[in-house]
Amino acid sequence: MRLQSLMKDAGLSGHELAVRCGWHKSKSSRIARGVTPPSDADIRAWCAACGAEDQVPDLIAAARNAEGMYVEWRQLHKDGMRRVHERNVPLYQRTRLFRVYASNLVPGMTQTAGYATGLLTSITEFQGTPNDVPEAVQARLSRSRVLYEGHHRFALLLEEDVLHHRVCHDDAMRAQLRHLLTVMRRPNVSLGIIPRRARRSVWPLEAFYAFDSAQVAVETLTAEINVTAPSEVHTYLRAFAELSKSAVYGDAARSLIQEAVDALG
Figure 1 (cartoon, one colour):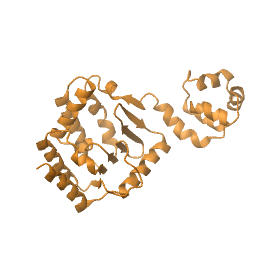
Figure 2 (cartoon, one colour):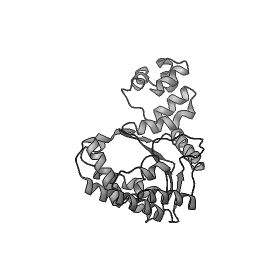
Figure 3 (cartoon, one colour):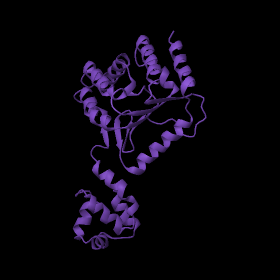
């Protein structure tokens, strides 16, 4: 546990830390062993005792989100995928600036019904979870209304390979790519494509969604990881800024999308 590491780094025993915090020594032991979850005030006192006040924001964020930070997709999808999309609607509605890096799939809020159907069908079959694909597709499209309603801005970065990954039949893929050409004309959307041959300062990463500067959702094969610690969020936003430098926009991005459309025949 990070609090215990701070205590050791400061050269303190549990008794010495308890004295500095004004606690009974058993409280330090219970917190260090994870028996008692620390309150925000406990974390501040612990860090002050260890001379590590700069760690307070990250530790408080980690403590508040410990249960929901790492959630397996099979757990999230145990009743199907519709509820996951519906659950995220409040987060989407309150977010003003979305920064999305897509290394494998078209970002969810820009997916067409055909593309989403192909993708969610594959996910359901791979995970062996209940099949509620039609309902999940409608929930995803409903959640995507933030593109057109309210005061939301979108900075989207796609690896060029995303344009060529066929997760649906060719007609649906063609429609999806043309939809991207339409979406990128919106005044609240910035869409960049990172060419395959681009010189880059940041290597390809797992796909991630940044919601303002408060939270980053990272998508892996087995789980969704929700990052809220300020220093970690900052690292993802820094990576996004660096990746943006390797992307092309406007006519150059449209040309890459059109090339992918043409490749479908």
